[in-house]
Image (cartoon, rainbow, N blue to C red; front, top):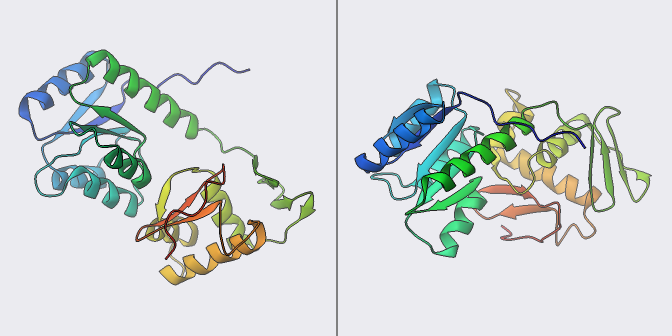
Length: 244
């Protein structure tokens, strides 16, 4: 087994926190860890920074003035900003945690938190992100489906499944991001790029994948609709969580 991927040194970490004392504490902690802290007191400032600067990780407070952390995260993912996000919150409601994770958060830290715990969570998130940034896996699989990226081949229960180039691109994009909620805009931007396509195009192609790969396309288990947002690939087949 290869050694675990080490977290990158000197990461650029955006801390979005409206409390000045906590923001200063995060700045000191990140600097002592050898990272480059970037600070924002509200969501609008954070989004502006993310649009123009390279950021390796975001520490995102939930209770922000103006746009709250959930709205900021939703906007990030809609714009295709795929950096890891650790939510910081004083709220311990499980529904809030589920919402954050479904919107694309990578981790959750509840205030008050120890600096040791926060440092460990940051290292883990950076390590995972660094692993994702390596060359994509050539073989992907879920249930009885096997996807060979290099051969551009899909098999289900040992039988070849015909795939167009666009269907294959959408499939691998989803499989590379398991359990991540992806908006239609994000899929449109990354799979169709600048070609003429609409949000309905995304829906139609997801329906095609379901028809080819789901045991029951009318009750999808793997290519899940997230109501009002987009889609999520569930490798464990946890079922649809909000049909539209």
